[in-house]
Image (cartoon, rainbow, N blue to C red; front, top):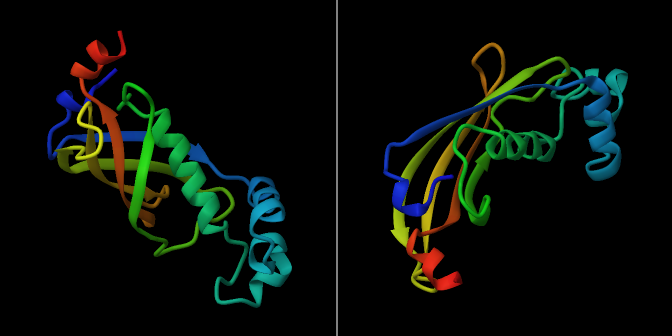
Length: 152
């Protein structure tokens, strides 16, 4: 497990791959984003997507899974402090194999919780063609090693 003290600007991490199926795209959309271009392959052909596309929120959820299972294990888990930006420059399609590449952009001690630090990260989600399907810049809370003494 890595603590805030172990993180440095420029550190990189990777995760994945995950393959996205048509059934998963339709299932997620049916529960959370029921729009025709996420639910119906035939109807989706007549939209700007030109075919079935995963909800951006589905892509974000898959990204979160790859973050949690990545090679960058944070002590205390991944606790989000907020998202600065999220973009979906290309749609995620059935059969896409996704992976993530992450980088720490900034680190600072938390003003409100000095036993924790905040790491600002950029995470890029790519498909099997190395096309970017999502970019995310977020702030994550990470405990310091000194926080261990506070908890005891």
